[in-house]
Length: 276
Image (cartoon, rainbow, N blue to C red):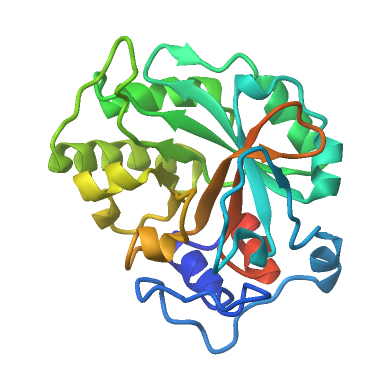
């Protein structure tokens, strides 16, 4: 397995030209491309369902840099999606899934284990995410996540979900940015030491703007932006995943589901998902 920095650099070499109908800018924060990037097996690339366009219960009128111009799409799920026909979802173009595993230090998603097992059986790349609460230390929350998410060499890097929690009945704290960034680093360090790959950070527009979470070094980001391309909503920010809808309609899933894209080519996706 190659190191995190080398992996990001290799993927960065394959990001340019990832969109089909319109060009996608490469943020300056990404590493410079290697002269001779390692490419994936053409058969693996051919097996991917590329450029899917899922339905949406409340679609946004995209005018430029549309989500479906990216080749690799996925979903994020929790208990609220219920039972999922993962084989059907994969055949429709779901290449990856982020699955809620834990929240704070005492809640675990009751559907995580079955989603985790069934997605793998269907050949869908998957990762687990933790919803962070600011009323418990990062180390305690990391241990809670590790208790519920098994090591699996085939898994994608896991995810730290950091956003404000104004509707929580138990924790609405809003620490200063420096405190938040320190807690995030602690959580990421513990999970990286345990699972072998540094987690991705998911966040929202207001949280990103108000906390400076984007200043975390050596971190890949999954950004929520349902009414504009990340290049407009998060100016200058680097990102690996973009959550572009919370009302998606995907075959194999009853009801609405969040939709996401990977920022890169099919070659970059395979390399990111399965580093050498």
